[in-house]
Image (cartoon, rainbow, N blue to C red; front, top):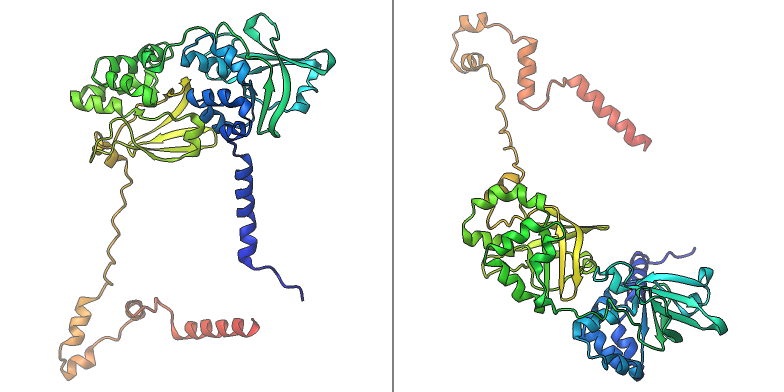
Length: 413
């Protein structure tokens, strides 16, 4: 007889498969480039601009790396760090292009988005990269807003993990007037102006009118994630907001910020409790991040808000739009209690009904005449007595029939 494998071994197989799959899909651009010293400068600036961490969080991506000589030419332009980040973002394509795919483009050319375009930092067609097959088997690269010139060509493949990540070398840095325009650092950005222009003016006005505004601004350089309620959500909430003290208003607004950069992908993969700018010792002021497929929600124990869009994503600052004002339980305990389900009290068992007159008469001593005149108990009284003893009206014959039926079933089985 063939022996079956142990159950523990069978259960371990899918777990092993999941482990191998997750390990295969993970990548680290810093480690990949570290094996090739000729790209050390490019690798360094991917880390300095925080692009490396963003690349590692993404899937289906292509990096157009340039060697140290090409980086030296780019650095000679003396671009600021955040402007340099925009230029390097052009070299990160949000699609997979292995060496084989480059030479098999439909129609010989394609236009693909770069990370510079996908983060919303680029205007119009800026941030799109043109890839075209040239004569002699060469492949050219150029930015769409650069009036068409393909100023770089494919050199070689550095590393490929099909449909996950491809790292290719190109001859020169891609150029773009939009990407090379002076870019202020995060702390120099006008956060409230950004929110006001994109459907969050009411929340921005509340920040400006309180001491919460400076706290948001001071936190940006170290990393900041903002959850900005829509104008409609804030306007609907204003009656509750006006009833708060000034200190509580500040706490409520700070509750909408996390003192760390958290991309949408990170929020999806790291569900759980997060601290906010309002967290202070015993005052937890936290909420729980949950995702259901593509939908990410923020649960506060009082209400639940949903992320509906991204207003800005420029590490170390990211601003999300949400459909409700977040209500911390520290400020709205009554509302939290009102929403908690109330369990109905369990009913106490009802005492069995007794005929007090008959019981009392039965207990009392009787004369011979009384005993002779006492009426016999009728069938209803007997049934009630049976109910009190747990028989529930089942007479002896029915009970015997039930027992015999059970015995017959047992014998058949």
